[in-house]
Length: 178
Image (cartoon, rainbow, N blue to C red):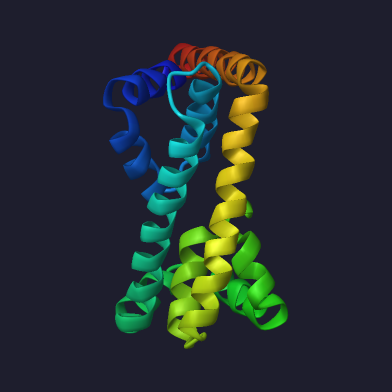
């Protein structure tokens, strides 16, 4: 099971695994790390510091890819022109607010960071707002794991099992139709 594997990886490789996970943007990893902090396997302060640090490094890399490699970033963004246009409109309309909360809008994180980099948005302003956004993101998801971890883990495992059963049923139906 994915959750059990992730918990085992976090326990075995600890903070370095969490750091890499945070660079790659992983809310489930933050929830699990918060839960492991509540179980006193991890230090809550270290988890928060590591997740903020990893997320900031990942964000800075993607933002500067957009800033310094805008032609290549545009090629990637142009693969979905409707999404690119929607993100550009959001930037025009919401600007700095979007930087604070983009991590909470599923599927927009990397495209928005690239778009902000390409757009010539003020780097210092972006950095300050991104730091605030990353801190909020980290505190929210680590806290969910810390305060609601047991019920969150049970819920995730429940849905994971149901999804596996659903996939097996679908595969069975497909197999029987042939």
